[in-house]
Length: 204
Image (cartoon, rainbow, N blue to C red):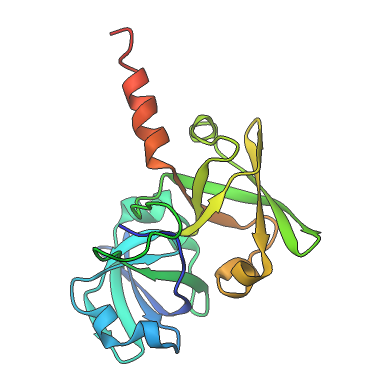
């Protein structure tokens, strides 16, 4: 489990196709801060990489390696990653840690596309478009994780929704490098996911 509070921005050091070219291995450069010491990247550890929970299979002082299946590549923006791509990183939640964002599983539900980014006082208002399959799960003032960042939805209209991102969040996540047309990983609030599933059996 994660909180959606990013602890550093890493970058892709290398990308290698594996599994007959269907899967991928990524070596990820970690940030130069106290959070990302070696203990954070021990073998088998779970790390949220732009919102996707991945398992460490190898690591060094300032890097770690993960492998990703074709299924994950097809449901996330990991297939867009190239050497130099900046990604948000968060280590897994430990019992007793402060839950400052909302509970995030690292299981991405799909992708949203950046439609606009507009300065608004001291923050930036971002508007994203969802696929029709995810739109029903997003509600105004509800929680959502975008590229692993815990955010509050401002408004929803059709397939589109907006969020405001303060300067601090922009500076400490890969929102600083996002542009119109980019795709972001979306994890809907798990309460909405289970509620919708329960309601689907209401008349069964």
